[in-house]
Amino acid sequence: MAKEVIRTERMAKVFTDGKQSNTVLKNVNLSINEGDIFGIIGYSGAGKSTLVRCFNGIEKPTSGHVFFEGRDIVSLNARELRAIRRKIGMIFQQFNLMPSRTVFGNIALPLKHSGLSKPEIKRRVHELLELVALPDKENDYPAQLSGGQKQRVAIARALVNRPKILLCDEATSALDPKTTRSILYLLKKLNRELGLTIVVITHEMSVVREICQKIAVLDKGDIIEEGDVYTVFSSPKKELTRSFIETTSSLGNVTQLMDSDAPMIRLQPGQLLIKMSYVTNSVSEPLISYISRAYQVDANIVFGDIQILSDHPLGGLVVILSGEKSRINQAIDYLKQKHVAIEVLNHG
Image (cartoon, rainbow, N blue to C red):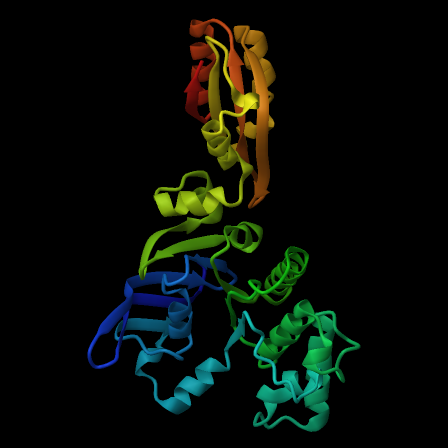
């Protein structure tokens, strides 16, 4: 059975200025296990950053509980909380490096009162520089680094106390796509090689798709959907989740094409425009060629988007079907039997 690292129970957070109150989190129940890469996604204002700051005690919940390795951190005194925080690393969108310190100085800063000798600190910093692939940057200053290099330094600093969990608050939002992929690859490497539990706070579904194993969708302080990433992506239950997923797939473009009456999807009498969504390994079967042969149905693939997610194929095709109505219906029934979700978009 997986060991639980973080658990929240009926956790709520209300900010008040004495006149008005703002409920940011409502009755949040979450469980994050050791070794998870857990994504928490939501739009701006959903409460994501407040939630992650409750995980390490930077914010104290108004009600409810936050457990770290079985201890309720809400009830800890300041000394006990500091000890817990050493086991929880955190990185941010803007890196939060000290510009007046070198890379070495930034990484070593959390060890200032650790009791380690200078040689031990030097050895630990060098280990981390190797780990984040910056072995030759120890004497550089943050201003001399690229955005990706700054985030690697921030990751190294967050790992210096050998934490059990790393909280990533929009850690790739300030980076270009290529650099984002390199940082996500590094995080997956840390998860795999160190057994590090990682929580990814983001508004980008592409980040969740790339790195996470489990996901929770946060909307206006509520967890509206959660589960393993493949299940949520293949069968989203909430409209907000579906809208997030559409940002990672070209299949949603068909709506714009239909609105503009694009020639490529303009239908002749008797034709059918459908969207096929694969939700199982049936994507590996030659379904299009089969229905063409078995039912004498012409299938014109307009476009498709099939990706590998959690080692399983996921995605679909937009297809124009031509043929006798009864045979088209038989072909669609066959596809449904093969666990392909069919949405009829337009009739000729």
